Length: 392
Ligand SMILES: [Zn+2]
Image (cartoon, rainbow, N blue to C red; front, top):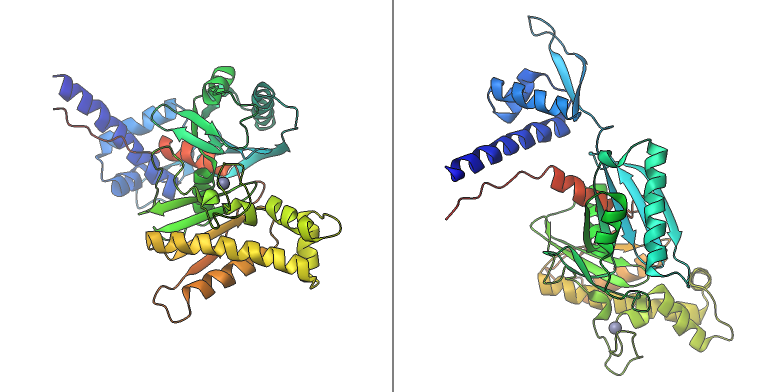
């Protein structure tokens, strides 16, 4: 008996999801059109529409064209009812975005954590930024379906728990940031690795990406997400594709992770600044080094070129390891100069006559969409069809 009751509930949810998915793709739609597209019976569709209407998820958007009889009522998803929040905690930069159910960013905010800030300060600032977003959009907590939080580190996905925060060891003592935020805001928080969420945002921004691709993000650190059959491969601790600490030279400079000669010792913007300062009379910031390289200054060209070769080496190894030919390189600070160096080196390393044809694409995220991945994850979970589980 329990089995039958459970199955009925799940079937009802699955049907509801089907109607929502049909509306999400094609609205506005009449009842007849929803019946045709969902292949559900008319009474089932009418019941679901009534239920969705009560929950404020749909509304009547006027009358459609008559097919001979009365003009049909057209139904549309209510994009003013539910919203998702994404947080990209890159550290020091932090970004917050609000999106509707179509994953369109409606509000975003970005700031830098200050050197003396504690974990409590960071959480407080996040809470304030999310409340500010709610005020601007004129919505309440009951309108938020969830918060997708990206952290720079490892995640125990089953327990929804951050287990390591890169670069934040000095302020993070193992506290449960997702639970803290959830408690303060009264909204469920789902935590994931930041790069994996960026990759999800990239898929929203570039919907024509193939099913298998590598996503490499170069920011304060360097990370990678692996998409296999349209799904991000999480790994044991939600942190697969930890590219930045691939060792390229065991005799190389000491890395903050304890190893030597990691990719991050050469290819991050910070590493470029350090390596430039070693050979220059005076240190320069990353933007200045790029400008000098464009003007033909030998030291700037050499340091940037070396960074590009090192990143290309790590990316080529990953492409061959997974047998994936498409790679997206996301770079928050690049004007295209560094990307061109990396792409040229990837193509050179893989050889022009090889049957392995690399497709090296530039990431398209901007400040406004960096936190969209958290929203995308929450929205996709919202529209996820419940799986019918067969007992015993
Ligand atoms: Zn390292």
